[in-house]
Image (tube, rainbow, N blue to C red; front, side, top):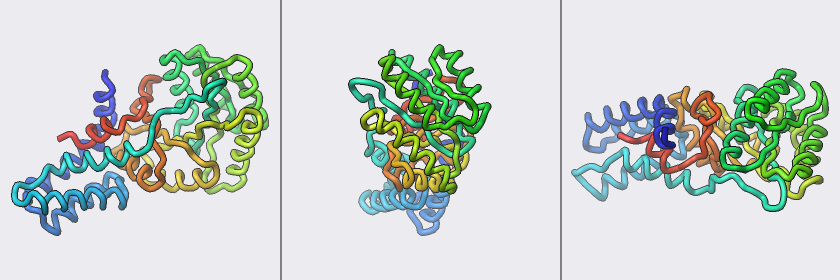
Length: 303
């Protein structure tokens, strides 16, 4: 399955709802009226595009109507162009730092799929002929250590782990030491899930980042927040709070195949200016895909 087909299949629920609503509005009222604009606004808000992105699309549609007159513009093409323009404004490639391991910290609240995402990232970069290492820095949840070890065994990737209840920062420290000694390209740190409202847990994450920053210049080089698409706009609050505590470099959005609220990807990027680096479109290791703004916008708004 090609990348666009994966995007299309993964965004099917969001796409189906959006296209149905927009077609209904446009076919009933080819002329732009106050009420048809309001309905279009509701359709976009309903798919969790957020107020700022929704207003940007509505303004572009209005402008097109004013300049083209009676022929009426293609609302789908306008929405697609606005979303693509927005999403393409931030570079989405994952850094690779020359001369040693690129350290990537995977953060987020409980239940977003951080451990699975860390393993899928390792799988993706292995397929790109990069060498990788995983670190089990979630020492709160006993099952998390076992889970990442199972993934490591399955993918033939070494996992650096401590015991349950160990200091997460010391596990991260050992992992960076191992990554430097083995000369790997990427080290993925699977950190514990933590509520963005718990100050003490956020401080612990800051400590982990300080420890590895002393050990390897610039580490962590990427801090990626894993968001569950099914939570819709609640994800925006998580992103805001994590970004305040540990400056994020990008987002990974999972479970996009299980929601009709795929617009939240666009809303968060619009508000926080954080690039979406990868999106999760299913259960298999290869279902984590690098983000492509053009194909994402097309999969959302293809008529």
